[in-house]
Image 1 (cartoon, rainbow, N blue to C red):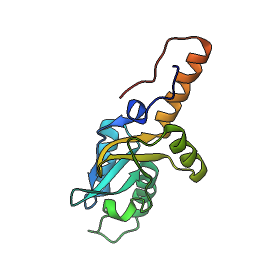
Image 2 (cartoon, rainbow, N blue to C red):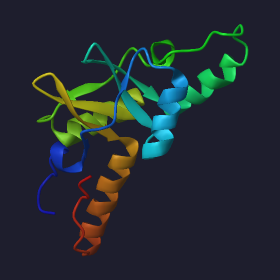
Image 3 (cartoon, rainbow, N blue to C red):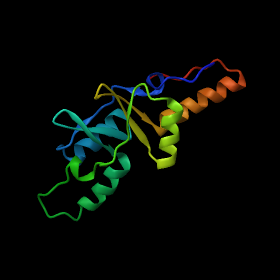
Length: 144
């Protein structure tokens, strides 16, 4: 690896997403099925927020205290302040921002449309690839 990898080469492209009005149980089932910990959230087809596995677990614990017949929706537990970056954002700038703000994911867009997600797990893969390269291994960053 002789140059900085591009965001599009290390992000998870075309991530699963969920509608803001779906029940939290549906979001949890989708996360389990696809083995992901972050789900972009859309409202009327537009990117609105993100929901994390941690948010869902906390919500489902509190849901036990809801009156019978009431259930939480994704809108009730999703993060309002989501980190969104354009696909041509410099990887090191995005990583610095994620670390400074203690953010676990960045939603990647191109011309306003969701095209990928970059998570702390993706960052670990990039770092591992760089370390392999420094050690002399021939591994390149994994593309999803």
